[in-house]
Length: 346
Image 1 (cartoon, one colour):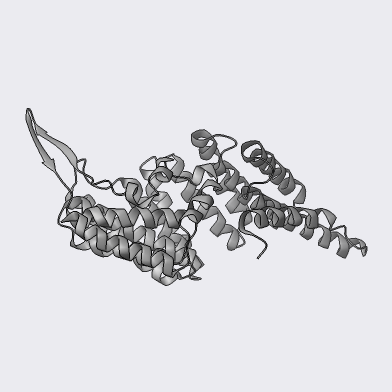
Image 2: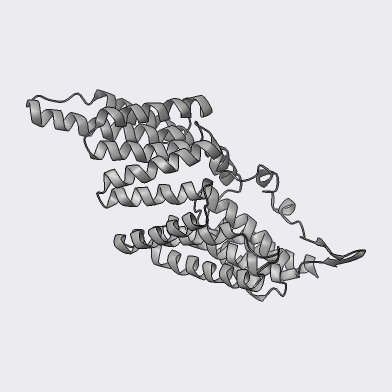
């Protein structure tokens, strides 16, 4: 029975990707070029081939002394989880055309699956759909799906209070942080600021000082920068950097991302020397970790080029002499070379 359902679904999956012109090998190539901190378990590459991705999730549960029961997934859950893993992988590399259909299929199957575990996976599918819509600029749709995921997780948390089978607290915090960011994406910066402050106060009350807290603080710092509150943003980002270094390491992608935001706070207030010093440190970390032709360098090069450009423009106004933009241009040429090698000239 499972085989018959899957045969129909595999036809649907292959049709979807072929219809959208997405070669199956392409997402794997993108995945390999991603920063290490953003990658999932390497097993995801091993399970990418379609037939290997299907692993029915049966689970052994111990109910008491000597009393054991097996709970097996429903057909809908098995097929839905297959779709979720495929859609999550596509989302992780980039929002390929066809991803929305695959994740929507996963969501619909999880809604009708009978076991409790499927409800947690429903929340995950809604989160991934929210991520897809956010990446493609459909912020209102993203907000709706992320809020729905939050409601699913909160409902499960109440239902499984005091037990170990409910969703992790991190899932709820990630949804809350995403909702804050989406309010900013929709243009309501003040509402986003209030939501971030509420979330950060909750994390403080729980005495949470971990990587997830650092990510929330980084996003909040970026928002403060958008609100032209550079000094306040710097205070928040310095705290985020401290946590990232503690939990991920000095040269980690998480720590360098925070430093990039810190550099922007200095550039905004005209302290280009400090901004460039930070950017150069980030560049050294990326080269040490990935080499000198990895796409992670593109963001750093562009940040440095923009900072140097602004500095030269200010010098032009002060001295009435033409600025030297050669270093900015060379950095952008390096970025272009990396991107052309990865994606092609077109």
